[in-house]
Image (tube, rainbow, N blue to C red):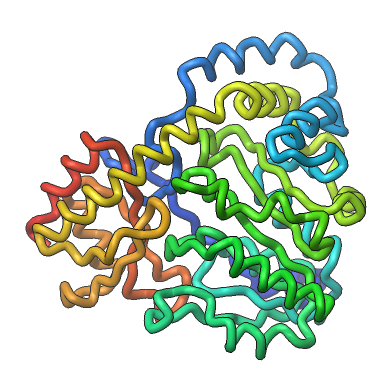
Length: 366
């Protein structure tokens, strides 16, 4: 028996996604490839985790009721507007599993987080790319988008976009949500990186979900608190939308320790994230000037806290650039995995001043 003969046909050529944040595999390397809070989690985190182990012998609350209440309060929403998942990737998976039929057209801006396309393909969707171009400063071209939306079942937007770092304004995103609503298109809006952007309160669309029942906003603690090993994220949507998505959620998808940690962090320590966002906003400007002074191919200060830069001015491709940076014990994100024409770009993120200073001095041989 060939196991391939029993696999769903649209899965046979589906490859795994490539992600950054692999610095832990190497010793003595500064990992600039991931976009986590560079100041780490609050000092109290270890004690919070230990306190949660007293209930480890019990099943977690499958409804995540207490955590939903804390999340809803943070966003001035109702408990019924919240779906909790094992990281925002859990919400990404639930979205196409709820709303996408095999053969449905899904529009995804590219380059962007690979899991959108991957999970939609698992659901059997046909992916249509909305190419983000350098001539548009890697921002969404509304004219091109308007031509792609008709006949689509869903649209994915990442704000700020990963890996380009561009942030679309609230007004622009809501105008897209309005167009989608009029044309019966679901909108998945990923705001998992937004908390670390200075002024995020004026950009987030979380407070508008009741006006747009077609919109799901994804959030996560992974980036904001630098806790990728604790899988916790959530989706915000109109109550009826959440109710439908809950149908595809796996039972006990979020452990008791994760629920407890998330509840404490969101309730008591969002100031830790706000402080980091303010410091990173200053650091990105310092880093731009420092790298520019040594001829490093850095673009103007990003909207967010990470840079998306071409390597062509150095006469090398992204994989070669990444290898040479590793010779200086610095790990950056090779963006070749996002496909052409982005195989000539790398992404790297802002850290604290000490690490930014050290990294800006190392790659002078490039």
